[in-house]
View: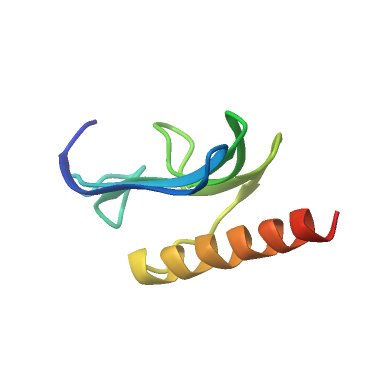
Length: 97
């Protein structure tokens, strides 16, 4: 289900890390009752560190490194806030290391 790409941004933090956000408008379905397909990813050294997405058949969920957790979708605005909060938390932990 591709839909219409309504937003795409890749923002680099430095040479080895970036965030990439993609949002598509799709028909509402059992899998995507809110009518959005999305991927919000934070990548470091070509490794996905944080990701929120709703891949086909999986519904809304988030990834922290190699672990996957359910995510309760409350709109794009809240999703964006949650994603940015997680990136800040990870980056602060990296800075402390």
